[in-house]
Image 1 (cartoon, rainbow, N blue to C red):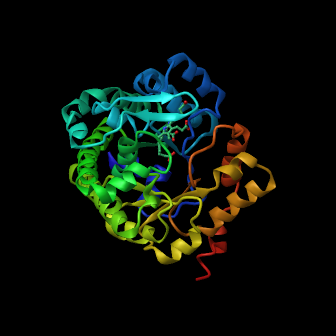
Image 2 (cartoon, rainbow, N blue to C red; image 1 turned 135 degrees about the vertical axis):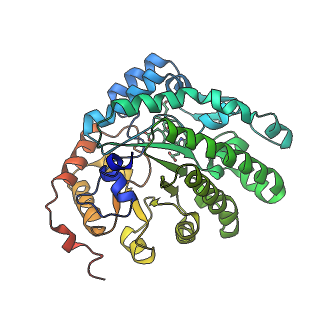
Length: 358
Ligand code: CP3
């Protein structure tokens, strides 16, 4: 198993190796900016159907890999499929984003059914196996879940925004937030474990809203559950690689790296990668962090930023990516240009690394 896996550039980086040029995939690489996605999305009717119909989800996962030759495919699904599979009502309102039936007390949480998770997520596992069978051997398949805090934000507030209800519950009813996070943490360990068994090479935890929390709550609701997930996944799947993405975590990114055990940290757009590389232990790989809006804008400054970012981190294990997801009106040609620029970087540029100077 590991012999073949170890050849994949993304897995080599996750194992702590600096690879040149850095392997690349992009958050939300499947999605509305691709005409072939929009076509299948229409065919599926609604977004949940697209996520839970394995032939369609497989096709959507593979589209950006075929078009751009990405080094990794990320399973096409959504972080909210997990609470949906536990029984929480979910819909994606057209043009408005997700809506969940809010959990406003322990009774609401207890109405969910952890035993339903396996059956509810069976289509996701089938998608993972199908994608695995179709991917080129050098392409890494990334499974994923939301981190417990970010999933809890949607479960408690019922919708995106700045999550006023969840942030109030953190202080006014800490037992409720703790219980929601406990339920999601336990479910996430199983959910990611099944994805690995179905054929995911590694997994990523999206903590898009981690940066909302002050340091003590960040430790309790971000670092602690993430550490538990990482630890349990390693018990079940020794050596499995985990990427964490504590978006807008600021300085808390350092204890996150030190205390969660993740193999790689996703950097949001605000992070200075070279500054972080000087502060973080070298064993942790980096992933990121081009501004998605620069990707949309394109032009000379896009190419320059790609080169500067890759060179700045040369010598450090780095997977090239965005600081957040691709925005829907991004021209696909800009994505192609990024990949081409990265792959045409001259060898030997490790010496020009900003890190080498330190
Ligand atoms: O290509 C990939 O990156 C894989 C698929 C993926 C989706 N969502 C597909 C999606 C992944 C990894 C996610 C993660 C996700 N979902 C996060 C964490 C990352 C982040 O963006 O911060 C969050 C917070 C969600 C919840 C969610 N799903 C929101 C807020 C929305 C609405 C915003 C939007 O872009 O419409 C979604 C919908 C969603 N998830 C779409 C896609 C392709 C758009 C749905 C459509 O086609 O109508």
